[in-house]
Length: 149
Image 1 (cartoon, helix red, strand yellow):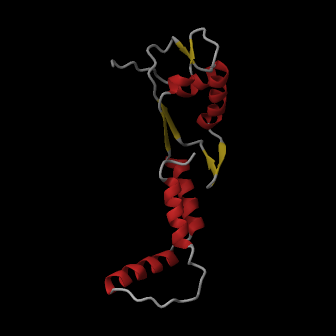
Image 2 (image 1 turned 45 degrees about the horizontal axis):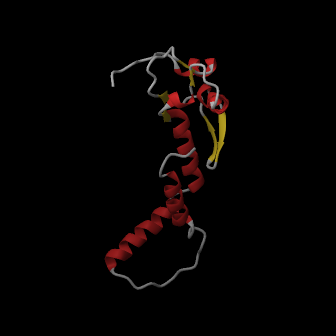
Image 3 (image 1 turned 30 degrees about the vertical axis):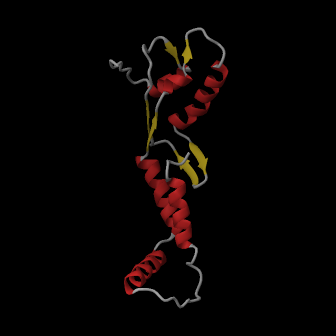
Protein backbone atom coordinates (compact mmCIF):
# COMPACT_ATOMS: atom_id res chain seq x y z
CA UNK A 1 0.00 0.00 0.00
CA UNK A 2 3.01 2.28 -0.04
CA UNK A 3 3.35 4.86 -2.79
CA UNK A 4 5.84 4.23 -5.60
CA UNK A 5 9.38 5.03 -4.50
CA UNK A 6 8.60 4.71 -0.78
CA UNK A 7 10.49 1.43 -0.42
CA UNK A 8 13.60 2.93 -2.03
CA UNK A 9 13.42 5.94 0.29
CA UNK A 10 12.97 3.62 3.29
CA UNK A 11 16.04 1.61 2.28
CA UNK A 12 18.08 4.81 1.89
CA UNK A 13 16.97 6.05 5.31
CA UNK A 14 17.76 2.69 6.92
CA UNK A 15 21.27 2.66 5.46
CA UNK A 16 21.72 6.25 6.62
CA UNK A 17 20.72 5.34 10.20
CA UNK A 18 22.70 2.10 10.50
CA UNK A 19 25.75 3.77 12.01
CA UNK A 20 23.85 5.85 14.58
CA UNK A 21 24.57 3.58 17.54
CA UNK A 22 28.26 2.98 16.96
CA UNK A 23 30.75 5.01 19.00
CA UNK A 24 33.74 3.64 17.13
CA UNK A 25 35.59 6.02 14.87
CA UNK A 26 37.35 5.13 11.68
CA UNK A 27 40.18 6.98 10.08
CA UNK A 28 39.65 7.57 6.42
CA UNK A 29 41.66 9.46 3.89
CA UNK A 30 39.62 11.65 1.55
CA UNK A 31 39.51 15.01 -0.15
CA UNK A 32 38.30 17.98 1.91
CA UNK A 33 35.25 18.41 -0.34
CA UNK A 34 34.25 14.77 0.26
CA UNK A 35 35.06 15.01 3.98
CA UNK A 36 32.77 18.03 4.38
CA UNK A 37 29.91 16.16 2.70
CA UNK A 38 30.52 13.09 4.88
CA UNK A 39 30.67 15.23 8.03
CA UNK A 40 27.40 17.00 7.15
CA UNK A 41 25.70 13.66 6.42
CA UNK A 42 26.95 12.14 9.69
CA UNK A 43 25.86 15.11 11.79
CA UNK A 44 22.47 15.30 10.05
CA UNK A 45 21.93 11.59 10.78
CA UNK A 46 22.45 12.29 14.50
CA UNK A 47 19.63 14.87 14.43
CA UNK A 48 17.00 12.60 12.87
CA UNK A 49 14.94 10.16 14.92
CA UNK A 50 13.71 7.49 12.45
CA UNK A 51 10.68 6.51 14.58
CA UNK A 52 9.61 10.14 14.95
CA UNK A 53 10.10 10.69 11.21
CA UNK A 54 7.97 7.63 10.40
CA UNK A 55 5.22 8.76 12.78
CA UNK A 56 5.19 12.27 11.26
CA UNK A 57 4.89 10.75 7.78
CA UNK A 58 1.96 8.56 8.87
CA UNK A 59 0.27 11.56 10.52
CA UNK A 60 0.69 13.59 7.33
CA UNK A 61 -0.82 10.80 5.23
CA UNK A 62 -3.74 10.40 7.62
CA UNK A 63 -4.59 14.11 7.49
CA UNK A 64 -3.56 15.13 3.96
CA UNK A 65 -3.35 11.90 1.96
CA UNK A 66 -4.87 11.56 -1.50
CA UNK A 67 -5.43 8.18 -3.16
CA UNK A 68 -6.24 8.14 -6.88
CA UNK A 69 -7.80 4.93 -8.19
CA UNK A 70 -7.70 4.75 -11.97
CA UNK A 71 -9.76 2.32 -14.05
CA UNK A 72 -12.39 1.85 -11.35
CA UNK A 73 -14.66 0.59 -14.12
CA UNK A 74 -12.67 -2.67 -14.10
CA UNK A 75 -14.38 -3.67 -10.84
CA UNK A 76 -17.91 -2.81 -11.99
CA UNK A 77 -20.48 -5.34 -13.14
CA UNK A 78 -20.99 -5.04 -16.87
CA UNK A 79 -24.64 -5.68 -17.52
CA UNK A 80 -25.72 -9.25 -16.85
CA UNK A 81 -22.33 -10.98 -17.21
CA UNK A 82 -21.37 -13.27 -14.37
CA UNK A 83 -17.87 -14.67 -15.09
CA UNK A 84 -15.45 -12.52 -13.10
CA UNK A 85 -18.15 -10.79 -11.05
CA UNK A 86 -17.24 -12.82 -7.97
CA UNK A 87 -13.69 -11.41 -7.86
CA UNK A 88 -14.95 -7.92 -8.72
CA UNK A 89 -17.34 -8.05 -5.79
CA UNK A 90 -14.48 -9.18 -3.55
CA UNK A 91 -12.35 -6.23 -4.63
CA UNK A 92 -15.27 -3.88 -3.99
CA UNK A 93 -15.86 -5.44 -0.58
CA UNK A 94 -12.17 -5.05 0.34
CA UNK A 95 -12.03 -1.49 -0.99
CA UNK A 96 -15.12 -0.33 0.89
CA UNK A 97 -13.65 -0.15 4.44
CA UNK A 98 -10.69 1.85 3.14
CA UNK A 99 -12.91 4.39 1.40
CA UNK A 100 -15.41 4.67 4.23
CA UNK A 101 -12.65 5.14 6.79
CA UNK A 102 -10.90 2.49 8.83
CA UNK A 103 -7.53 1.68 10.32
CA UNK A 104 -5.34 -0.47 8.09
CA UNK A 105 -2.10 -2.24 8.82
CA UNK A 106 0.87 -1.34 6.61
CA UNK A 107 4.52 -2.29 6.89
CA UNK A 108 5.13 1.19 8.33
CA UNK A 109 2.43 0.90 11.00
CA UNK A 110 -1.29 1.45 11.40
CA UNK A 111 -2.85 4.12 9.13
CA UNK A 112 -6.31 5.64 9.64
CA UNK A 113 -8.08 6.33 6.33
CA UNK A 114 -10.87 8.48 7.81
CA UNK A 115 -9.48 11.75 6.41
CA UNK A 116 -7.75 10.45 3.28
CA UNK A 117 -9.30 11.72 0.05
CA UNK A 118 -10.13 8.90 -2.39
CA UNK A 119 -10.62 9.86 -6.04
CA UNK A 120 -11.69 7.30 -8.63
CA UNK A 121 -11.81 7.50 -12.40
CA UNK A 122 -12.55 5.13 -15.21
CA UNK A 123 -13.87 4.76 -18.70
CA UNK A 124 -17.52 4.28 -17.84
CA UNK A 125 -19.63 5.20 -20.90
CA UNK A 126 -22.78 5.65 -18.83
CA UNK A 127 -23.16 5.65 -15.07
CA UNK A 128 -26.34 3.63 -15.28
CA UNK A 129 -24.92 0.80 -17.42
CA UNK A 130 -22.24 -0.19 -14.89
CA UNK A 131 -23.08 -1.45 -11.43
CA UNK A 132 -21.01 -1.08 -8.29
CA UNK A 133 -21.88 -2.60 -4.99
CA UNK A 134 -24.39 0.00 -3.73
CA UNK A 135 -22.20 0.93 -0.74
CA UNK A 136 -19.12 1.42 -2.96
CA UNK A 137 -21.16 3.52 -5.37
CA UNK A 138 -22.37 5.62 -2.47
CA UNK A 139 -18.82 6.18 -1.28
CA UNK A 140 -17.64 7.42 -4.68
CA UNK A 141 -20.70 8.66 -6.54
CA UNK A 142 -21.24 12.25 -5.51
CA UNK A 143 -21.32 12.98 -9.21
CA UNK A 144 -20.91 11.20 -12.49
CA UNK A 145 -19.15 13.23 -15.12
CA UNK A 146 -19.04 11.95 -18.69
CA UNK A 147 -16.36 13.65 -20.76
CA UNK A 148 -16.02 13.21 -24.53
CA UNK A 149 -13.10 11.02 -25.57
